[in-house]
Length: 171
Image 1 (spheres, rainbow, N blue to C red):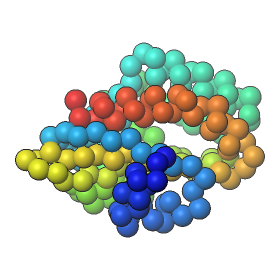
Image 2: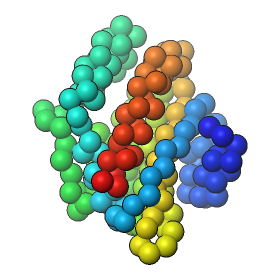
Image 3: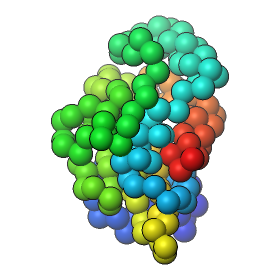
Image 4: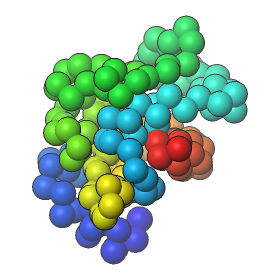
């Protein structure tokens, strides 16, 4: 991540506890005229056929590395803005909300794993004329030697998937 982008993201104090001791972080951005909840609902509902295929391939990697296997939804989620919780501990898709403030930020965590801890944060930065810049931040903290192995295998796909999810959030 570039120095400029990282400094811009650090201004959001809500992210500080999650960025502390992070082994990896990246940011994707998109601008649009949608609410924070609408952005998150659209982003988390983005499941084209090729993403489903990538999740199937991921299952093979998880089995090989002996990682925890989490339940998959029977069908891809189709969330509405009202389905996006802001209460810590509540689930949105397979993410668990950690902290949130409507129209400002939403920070969630993946389920507990032995290999890494991963957070997905969305920060809505108001621009002008009801347009917001949405910063989608991925934060990863390795917990075991399998963490960097796993993440480096999926990293190229992570960039593709999160970029497309970010764009879907404003469309």
